[in-house]
Structures are given as structure tokens and as C-alpha cells.
Image 1 (cartoon, chains in turn red, orange):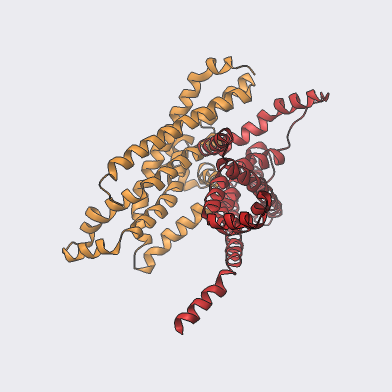
Image 2 (cartoon, each protein chain N blue to C red):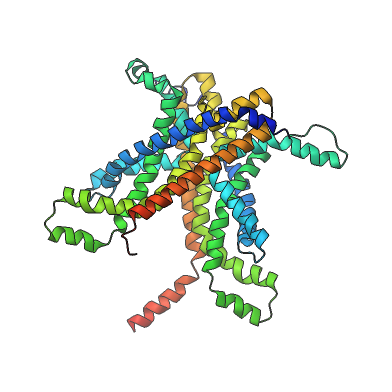
Length: 242
Length: 227
């Protein structure tokens, strides 16, 4: 039978893998948002070399497969880390854990695409607001944190939401460097039971469930982020109705 | 860092790049061919036609490509019917499995892009066709689909670049594409940084080539468009 042995204990393993998938998604989102904000500031910088740096980052991330970035970070980081550590007099073997390597690799990818989302969001804010804040004598940092950033969240949220959904599916890539997330756990179940279709389909349905939950959450936040707009609209309708 | 390994092994990387190109182009062709009926069924006014494309798109966009590849390459061998059918000679090959999966995957995305493009065509053009007395088939063949292809071209270009990146996953089912070849070389030389960076540069070059190609195509296809 196709679904024999569904509750043999592998299901519990898969659920544990699912938790790991969620963890790595959240961690990479945080890293990616920081990188995205940095990247967007770099691309809008007045200094040319910094702008080039931002452009180069986005260009590279867009053209190189995520899988290659995962490999490069995981296998390529050892020598770099050991070189840096040797400068501080530490000569033991260093290796990134698959979790850290995965978070860095997916965070870098997320950041590259988030750069574009944030840049669009910053440009969507009317320049008059910044000028008004300057006229009030606010410092540049204060304008960024008090005026621009709160509005940028709101504009960027739909774009970021799509990126989070993409990221969640990309976490499957980290299974190839041995992190025991959903895909890896599924492969282990397949090796044990020799029922590849059953288990990969189960995993696919679990990913679908995660996608649906994430979409619902994102919709909620999007709606919440627009709650300030509603009273204005209501007033406008009332005025129109007379 | 020892850059001489790149000089020694770049012909093999080029071999891998050639496989990668085949994967992207063939799956792209499958994608476009399947996406047209899919998108048409998706926008059909008859509700029962919408259901299958919706489920298909939901599945392929909601699950990781890696799982889809495993599902087809490893999964289908679970069924004896598949193993005994004539399809097995294709389905046992990682090459064809990769192309089929990438094709089915990109179909879902292209169908959504195409749907958006068809719906973006101004209503007036449809009405004009009706006034001219065109049948529905002629209207789609002569007016709507060519128009939609023009509108979707930039988005389609992006999708092809994404498929280029997705094709790297074929290396997980032992296919020697650019990433797979890089892994094989590294297993021999143990120089991960150099070879992965070289492979990355090749991917960048290929993606620039595709971008250039779509820019040229866009200029050819949309030069008559005023807006």
C-alpha cells in the first residue's frame, strides 16, 4: 500500500525537520533583511565606489545559483576562517556548521533580492517628508529611523513576503550539506523504507502547508500594516456621501 | 589560492556549462508549450477548467524544486507500472528527469506570467476583435497571444534566469552540469574556492548572455509598441 507505515516514527522525524526548516527560514530572513537594508543604502549612496559595491552584490546574487553559494560558503569558508584566526594566533581547524553556513548563504541570497525591494520602498517615500524632517532640524540618523524606516516596512512588506516564501523553499538546498531539515529527514526516511514517492510527496505536502501558513501570516501583517490608511479612506467615503 | 587549477580544468567546466545550457533551453521550450493551454484554462470563464491549472500552479509554486526533482527521479521508480513502461528509458536517466522536472516547474510560473499578460491587454482590443467578427480561436491566435508574448517578455526573461539558477539542482541527481562538474573536479583537486568561483563566474556570464538575448528580443518584438 502507498501509505503503509506513515506513522512508523518517520513522521515525527519529518516534523522535527519541519521545525528546523522554519528555524533556518527565520534566521536567514533576519540576516537577509539586515543585508538588504545595507545593500539598499549602498545602492542609493552618493559615493560612487559604495554604489558600485551595492550594484555588484545584487548583480552577483542574481546570476549565481543558490546551490553554488551554499557550497561556496560551506566548503570555501574554512580556509578563509582559518587564515583570519591564524592572524589572531589561533591555529586549530575551523569549520562552519551546516546551520551557520546555510543561514549565511541563504541570507546573502535573500539580501540581494531584498536590496531591490528596499530601494524601491525608499524611493516610494515622498522626498518632501525628508525635506520636512530636515527643516525641523532632525539629524540624518534620526530621519532614517523615525521617518523613513517605519514607512519603508509598510511599502516593502509585500515584496519581502514573496522573498520569504522563496527562501522557505530554498532551505531545501541546505540538505545537501547535511543539515537535518525537512528534505534531509525525508531522504533518510526514503533510504530506510525504500518508498521514495510516498515520502517525498509527504514532504511536498508539508512544504505546501508551511507555504499556506506563511501566506496567511503575511496577509495578516500586510493588512495590519495598512490599518492607518483605513480611517482616511472612511472619512473620504463619508465626505463623498455627504 | 592556486588559480592554475582553473586553467587546467576549464574545458571540463565548459562541458558542464553546455549541459546547463541544454537544461535551461529545453526545459524553457517545454515550459512555454505547456504554459499556453495552462494559462488559457486558468482564465477560462468556465469554472471547472480553472481547477486543474490552479492546483498544478499551487503545487509547483508551493514546494521546493529539489523535492520535485527527487519526486520524479527517485519517486517514480517506486511504481512498477512506470518501470515497465516505455517511458522508463527516459525516466531512469537523470538528464531527462532534470529536463522534465525543470520544464514542469517553470510551466507553473510561465502560466502565471502569461495569465497576467493576457489580463493586462486592454479590453478595447478584445471588443475590437469581436466587432470585426473574429472567432475566439482567431482572436487568440492573431491578436491576444502575440500581444501577451510582447507584454510578458521581460518577466519571462527573469524566469529564464531563475531557471538557470534552478538548473544547478540537477547536480544533486548525479547530472554533470556546471555545478555537478565543479563538484567532481573539487573531489579530485580539493580546491573548492577556486573552482566554485570559476563556476560562479561562468553562471554570471551565461545569465548576462540571456539578459542580452532578451533585451534584443524585446527590442525586436516590442519596437512597434508606443507605450
